[in-house]
Length: 344
Image 1 (cartoon, rainbow, N blue to C red):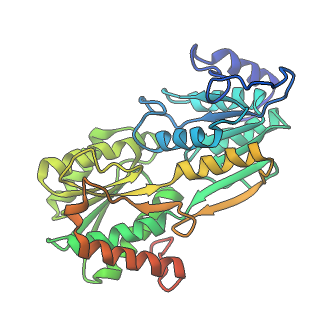
Image 2 (cartoon, rainbow, N blue to C red):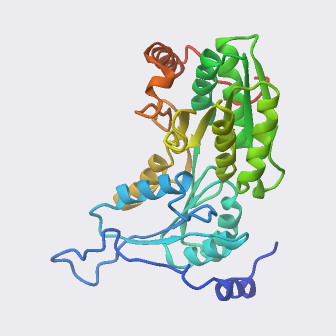
């Protein structure tokens, strides 16, 4: 799509009411003794599309937590956008870029609109989560999802009684493929004879937003003998977790700690520390140390982890968790490598 000023103005006019910039200072308190003429850093965050907005119990909510942590007590102007319908993200990113010093986009795919918006707002900087944009004024924060998924696959192989586990991906993207490769790699590291069943929900971005299709995909894998299911499928994963609970098998959550969703069947969650990424991006702008380029976050940087809490402690057991921790240490040290692609 070719963008010009006419397109830009049309996009501004199409923004839904209530989704323009909101809020001012992060903590809502004016600093004492500060001149009203002080120029404050202006930060905009565009969350991934979700009917639940920034409180989606997943990716967005982690991003919000990171934003709050970075801005606590800081003299900044914060603005947030929460797209709900298809296509809203692009217009929101364009609007954010016209007024912010830094635009943070949360989630794969939003970098495309950010690249276009950067042409219309040549002084704005962008921190994009889950994508790499190699051009000036862009900071790309990506994760080594394969490392966290490797631990999950290893744990699944240690616990599976049917010796068959499953993977449900939203669609084939670089991020989902890293989850898939790591999960398979960890499982085969524990047991090379294990069977891993795999399926995808769709071929477009809508595959992240359909819990019913997630449920159907999970039931197909359960029928094939899988007794542990890892879903890397956004909101569609909620259907996978429901199917696991209905059939009395285990599920593994993703992005946020989702262990609480179905106590007794949520084995663990592969937590992707989006909060760490957002806090790092926003905090560096506030501190004046923001730099363009690629930032990679994995186990070593505490960008990925498996969740252990009161909901799943007894499901895993001390002995199995000790094995996971030992493997995590080996991965960080480089003694074991988590594959980033299938066949690696």
